[in-house]
Length: 254
Length: 350
Image (tube, rainbow over all chains, first blue to last red; front, side, top):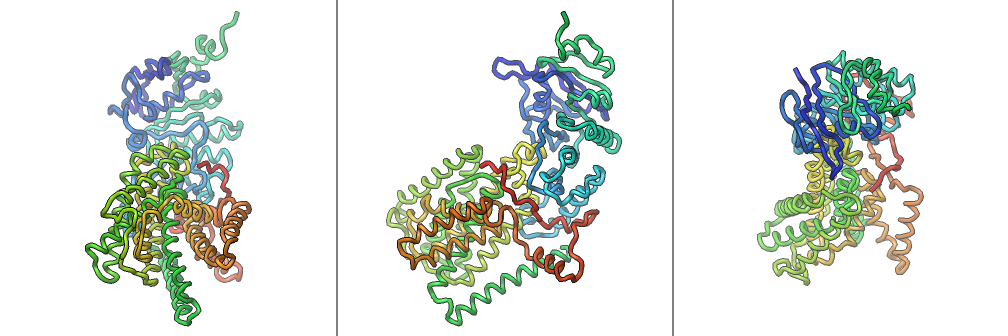
């Protein structure tokens, strides 16, 4: 079954067509890469899917239900979580709090319950902490639980952002350049983490990445974007040998 | 409720009562004369004002300069209620306080919804303007007593009641700020975009923070009205808003204990400086400048003062029972302890 389907999606900023006629369907459990030169519109596609921008054309469906035009937080509630190109954590809060904030949507006690510390408060807070610790265990980050997010090493901060996205209990995970600024060892670790999410939780994943080693190492299918349009699609090995793709990245030889 | 928490609550409650007992004894012994008691009454009001502003400025991370406006709405609500309907005694007083809070909160929602679309400097200026509009409207209408102000509000200078209202208010604000709603508000301060993409309804929680803040400002205003007996719109100008903001900044933005501490210090110090007459405001300003140079993050920064932490530290020092480790694995209760290890205030754009 399709988890996500984009049908002829496009957006104009004034006269500029940032993304045009974008089509993509992702089946359940797939791990797909979105690549393309700088400025190709990859992050714009993410912003369209997550509701930051409203598409001017086309529809985006999550499990067959149209979601375009909805507010970003409601799209999260329906099951799309994302990370950012430049890490965006709740820096001064602890790792655990970071995850518990993402679980807010699954908690239901009222402000009065919170104010007066009624039974429901204790119960839900306990459940939420337990669930957060479970997620941290999977990511092998339990030792950081009570540390401020900004005191973590870079690689761990990246991981925490993914863990936070996982805490919203998503159906689809969007990773925007997860390996940016990482050294090869950290990238290896990240690849393990992404595979773990796939195998352990069976989450469908779409990722933007420039690091070809990572893309070729884990993605099952690639979509290449150039000037806001799809340039090529298919098997990673074929894609990187596609003359059109090479031209888009490197330019044409004489 | 976990046992550990129950003990913490009991300790806190007994400390609050202990402090009250000390003040009462000092008063009975004649050491705290009437003048000192009147300052302490001001302290209770200022504590509520500072902690309530801390919700928007410290926790939500939005600078607002119209806090005195909400205070004035509370003051006039309670004043008019007491004069026109007037229930006697402490219950009447408390009902007046509650009404004042609710009415101020209503204004908080009405002003917050349009205004909170802005942020940073723009928000500061617009809230400043709203504060002034409220002041001018109060002077304009007749039922508020106009420019002459509202006289003859029944005086209620019972320190016991004021002390416990303040303690309860701070406790309620603190506990909501450490619940899921408070965490959502904190996440907006940390990173609005990340907050939204973690499923937080940013508009809703911004309004909630603003409303809570104005609710308690209204209560403080009502206490002020009953304490003074005569109020005028001029009492609630932007000068007062700035005074409250100074308390929050000095205490450390985002710290409730810091706000309580600095509200106390900044109320008592200017009074004690009275003997220096003309030099009073110079000394006061110098003091502020010096504190901000040496502790730019405020007295407590973002940290909270926890009595349990002190006890744990003492235990550690004297080798009794092992200190609470930051034990992880499924041990959820420790999660409730809000231990902000970070005190640097870098990257805290307004």
